[in-house]
Image (cartoon, rainbow, N blue to C red; front, side, top):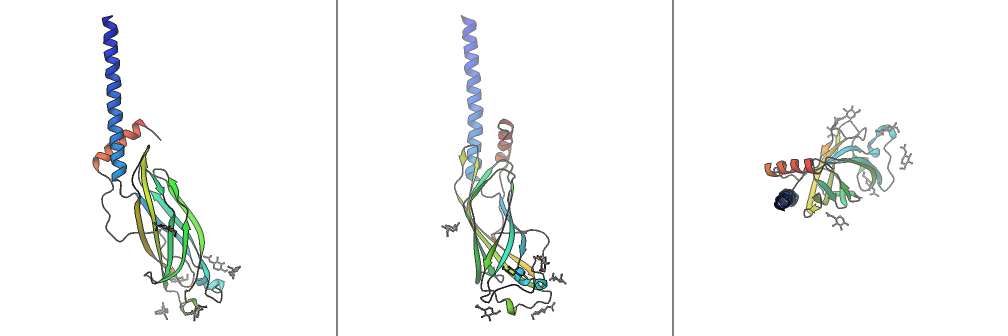
Length: 215
Ligand SMILES: *[C@@H]1O[C@H](CO)[C@@H](O)[C@H](O)[C@H]1NC(C)=O
Ligand SMILES: *[C@@H]1O[C@H](CO)[C@@H](O)[C@H](O)[C@H]1NC(C)=O
Ligand SMILES: *[C@@H]1O[C@H](CO)[C@@H](O)[C@H](O)[C@H]1NC(C)=O
Ligand SMILES: *[C@@H]1O[C@H](CO)[C@@H](O)[C@H](O)[C@H]1NC(C)=O
Ligand SMILES: *[C@@H]1O[C@H](CO)[C@@H](O)[C@H](O)[C@H]1NC(C)=O
Ligand SMILES: *[C@@H]1O[C@H](CO)[C@@H](O)[C@H](O)[C@H]1NC(C)=O
């Protein structure tokens, strides 16, 4: 009878400890997710303006319509936090400011796992660039790419609130080949300086979560 009692106490103790550990893990997971502010990065990997390809003869119609083809690279740089993206609104402008908008594009919202890398390529019809007045002597033409969306970080069943993302980049294009001049991908930024990605505590507990819930 008394041995039974001891086992029962031990059993309760184990349940209690387990419940406590899970409680702590869930709590820190929740805190991590609601405090997460950044972790998605956006890059222009390819950018090609056929109208500026002088080998092709500069291909645009009488109303100055042509296309730009591009590949965007969207990276989740977080080790164990997933990201939900709302629809991504991309606007293209001619020149390094946003004064002459020439086209827009919508990329459907999606979900991205931790550490995942997503590539999305397409082409967009653009209109209004004064193609004829762009000298084709081997120098550069500026285009501006701006992106607006909302992202939501999540871990297990916890979701943070939606966070506004408004970023942009200037893409310099060779005026005789139509290709992006910079070889490396160009990162879109908000212009503001970046703040720390996560605190030490959230990193520690993220590790704990990885150990307990390998996804
Ligand atoms: C010019 O563009 C049209 C339509 O986009 C395409 O069918 C045609 O092949 C292009 N011509 C050249 C020389 O690239
Ligand atoms: C530029 O046009 C030429 C001729 O149409 C074509 O062979 C070449 O692939 C084009 N350049 C790019 C980067 O597509
Ligand atoms: C096309 O661009 C040229 C300048 O390169 C401009 O003179 C012309 O009016 C434009 N055409 C239209 C239809 O916008
Ligand atoms: C190309 O033409 C533009 C406009 O005429 C001029 O400002 C620029 O200096 C030229 N660049 C080269 C490399 O000749
Ligand atoms: C643009 O491309 C041409 C032909 O490949 C090259 O001669 C020129 O230096 C390039 N210009 C720039 C600014 O990269
Ligand atoms: C993206 O565009 C859609 C439709 O124009 C709009 O409803 C949505 O609010 C835009 N998203 C952002 C983040 O600006």
